[in-house]
Length: 185
Image (cartoon, rainbow, N blue to C red; front, side, top):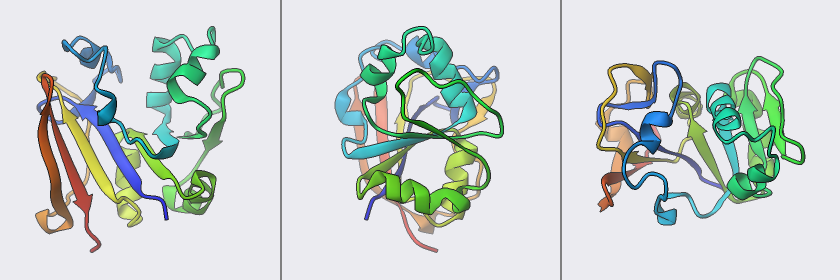
């Protein structure tokens, strides 16, 4: 059975995007332009993201104007985007727009992963819904040496320490990498 992994980069003080929903702050950190490939879930069969993350990537990478870039970034992996809006999709991209609570789409997402891992890219509220549904298996945090005054929090939930088990802690260039197993309630 596939694992659902919330794997992301965050600021030192717990934000994944700034108050304008931008991730540009992250790419200003030395070393962030060429991240270590071992930091990403290697067995991810598909991606899940919220509309803010998706729209930021479309704009930042100019994916609508250059749809071939989608293949370079995402390959042939399906991407589920949770949104309440109709969003543009780059030509040739396997993007599936879904609306509603995560719980309603879990079976469809797991089926599309075909036994491979599911990478939740962001945002924090979306990952929180996977946690609430008892479907989140791991949280992998790459902590950047930067702080933001405000923004989108990593995981806007109260999660007690007995629900998390540290699996890994290591330096990764200028970043720190922490990986937690999410334990059942």
